Length: 340
Ligand code: KG4
Ligand code: ZN
Image (cartoon, protein in one colour):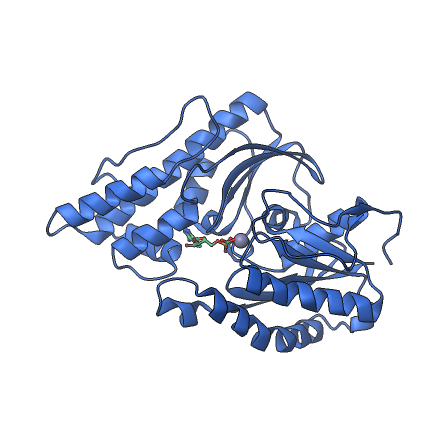
């Protein structure tokens, strides 16, 4: 039996989790800073890292208590080293390194984007490989073929704004509040998605994405016409993004013929996106519950379990990598050390 402690502090959520044998969540705590950043309309990095410092130790204590686990029962510590905000990442990585040094435990540095994919393994039956993963978060939009654990092929990514970033910016334009994704989703329920024909950047012949033209089109539409319903604009915007994501993912799936499609990242919590994938895909689609789509530490612990099992772990020289690309890592050394 393995118990892995996951630590995630890449942006504005402080998260700690304990996961048993790679898929059983014993505790999964997220302390959100959303109320603090909402008044600025976005994350203030310095405020985020200070808040992580205040929150992380009490959260660790609570996670151990809820999991009925003592520090000495842990098998390893998995922590996000990037991509993310430097000051925020440092808090989690420093905690993880200190624990590993004091308890003589293996340290597993996790790439946040790879971590998001593993939210799909937090269930009884594992997804089938090879699978096509769509990762849609606040900072990233990536289409990745996963052939095995630690074996990824990046097929496409956004050329400009990330998908979640587009949600956040459009919500701001429409005055719907922060964070934008859930605000747009709530507003869209009250609007008509066919109200406005917005540009669909499908970038034919490539698996890349582009959302900045769509965002600019909303800006011009909203600024140029009096009396528009923000609900209709939100619904039209959401429908356009959902159609782009589903169309492009299914096109890639047709070419690659994966066994499954996996969704990951905060935008994957969007109900309309989830429904549209289930409706249009002939290939089985795996969707983590919405609470595991947004940032959490259970996905980091789960990813840590599989990395460790495959012999990929770090040493105490692990450093943060704020601009890490997909699956880019540091300090990964093959090892023969077995799990406790
Ligand atoms: O994965 P995540 O929690 O953090 C990052 O790694 O960035 O993703 C956050 C992003 C934000 O842009 C947020 O607006 C978006 O995910 N998001 C949503 C929804 N919930 C969160 N976007 C659309 N619909 C949602 N329900
Ligand atoms: Zn994330």
